[in-house]
Length: 217
Image 1 (cartoon, rainbow, N blue to C red):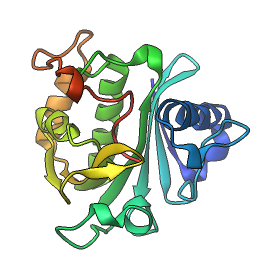
Image 2: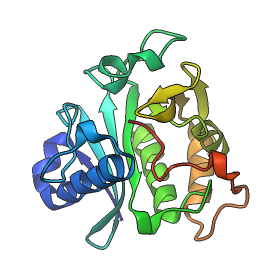
Image 3: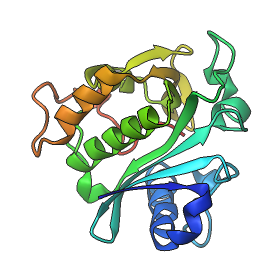
C-alpha cells in the first residue's frame, strides 16, 4: 500500500510518520554516519519537514518499509539553502512545477541486491512519478550518489547533472535535475509490478555498489 501524506494531513498519520522519522534516523544517522542529524530520541527531523513537505510511504500492512520526502522548491529546501554548491550549471531550479526529492530510504529487509531495486523501492519510485504527474510536476531535483544517473535513465527519467561529482558527508554526491514524463510512468509501472529484479538490472563491481540509501541528502 502507498500512502501520500501532505503536510496538512500529517496529524491523521502520526503513527506512520513516527516510523518515517525513525527509519530516517536509522538510515542516515546510524548507517550512513550523518552525526549532525543524530537525536537522542532516534527521530530524524529537520528544518524542511514543514508545510512544503509531502511524505511518500510504502507500507506492508502497518509497517513502513520505504520512504521519500518531496519538497516544494518555491520554499526553502536543501538544494537552495544547504547544498547549493551542488548546483553549478544553472541557477537553482525553482518553480511550482519542480519538487525536490529528498530523504529517500528503504528498510534493510526490503532492499535489493547491488544495483538492483527491491520491490518496495520500485513501488516507491512509481509512487513518486505518479504523484508528480498527477500534480503537474515536470521536474525533480535531487542530491544523489552519481550512479543514480544510470538508475534513473533505466527507469525512463531524464537526469541532468548540475555539477561535477564531489563529496558530501564523506560520500560521492552530485546535484541532479530530473525530468518526469509519461515515458517515465510507463517504464516505471512495468518495473514496479515485477516481483523479481528487472532484466536490465546488473550487479555493479564492489567499488561502485550503492550504499544502502544513496539517493539524496
